[in-house]
Figure 1 (tube, rainbow, N blue to C red):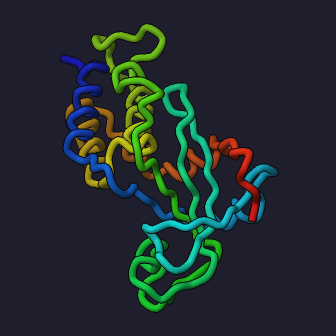
Figure 2 (cartoon, helix red, strand yellow; figure 1 turned 135 degrees about the vertical axis):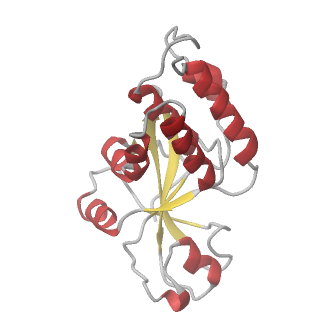
Length: 207
């Protein structure tokens, strides 16, 4: 019996219930070559702004760009974080994966910071994952699995990477879609190829 979209939604909800907490956010280090290319060649509209982030440091600010990425026909927000200056503290060094004493420090290091809170204004999990009259009984293909996998991470529905690994294993073993491993591995490329700058609030000015 083939796996349906309803089965994917049920697994998604299970992961959300198990791996979501109200604090913090999932982060992912961007491969250095991709980060350096973006910093060098970023189109107009991407402006780094100085921000305080308690996840990183209570003493030094960092640089941030808020962007939007399409998933299931909707735009979801995520952040690109970049150091402003080195700080020899564990939280800072771990967040940017610099190692002890900032041994691998680079001002071009970029970290993705995914949503802290689920944006309920976009609708329920079911309404997002069944757009345009789709049915729970519809069979699942690679495109649908790809959208579901991206939504889990980019939408902030889980806060631990173990959830992504479990979803990947489920797609491979149960839905027989092992290609999801490539979707996970190519997440950085997808984000940079499809993102757009998020609208800036009128009272926010560039640093």
